[in-house]
Image (cartoon, rainbow, N blue to C red; front, side):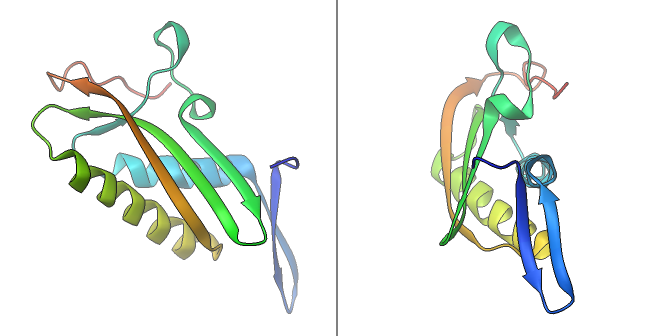
Length: 119
């Protein structure tokens, strides 16, 4: 997305969302899935920019998230829950259409104390 704002045209005018608002909604949706944490960035620090990418086009919003999963959870079920949660939450809270959600699970946590928190 070249512009960090997303527009939603209505009959009463245009509603403009900053990309960070959609990032926050996606982070909220991912955080509601049990046993999942957004992926840690470089040097152990986490930011939404490191783990959530959003691209908007005519088909809708394309979301990519990087997450870590707690050991013992079924990975395909967790990925489906993340996809479903993001689609439902973003569409309910912003009225945007989610075209697709790509989930990259690139870490496994063996203890829930290892799961990093978002800074």
